[in-house]
Image (cartoon, rainbow, N blue to C red):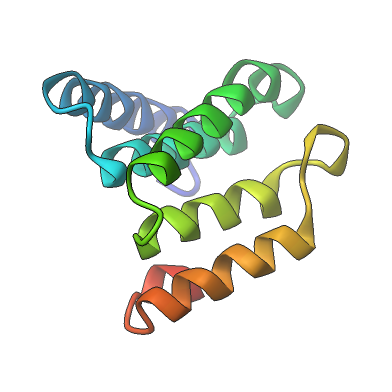
Amino acid sequence: MRKDKKAAGVAVDKAIDAAQRSIHLQDNSADAHSLLADLYGRKISLGNAMFAGPKFGPKVKEENAKAVALDDKNARVWASLGRQYLMTPKTFGGDVAKAIESFKKSVALDPQQDETYV
């Protein structure tokens, strides 16, 4: 789907729906909230950032904040937060230093988690 943004967008929309249903069933899952944040970020990267960013950017931030509040010892949560800081434009809160700090925290919590390195 890398070459077909429309199909990728449909797949991401389905994944967002599934993550939202999961959270509706069990709101206290830090993994589900950080997954939803990552999916919203993917939605931004697939669309026109000028339009998708303002719509989904705050949702990324909100879901990552919920995830950290639920489990601040979760490596996936810190990796997602790192991606948020790395991919967000500086004007809207992006910060490479904070991204690196989040990635380091993720690795310290679970050095075997390969998605942090990616």
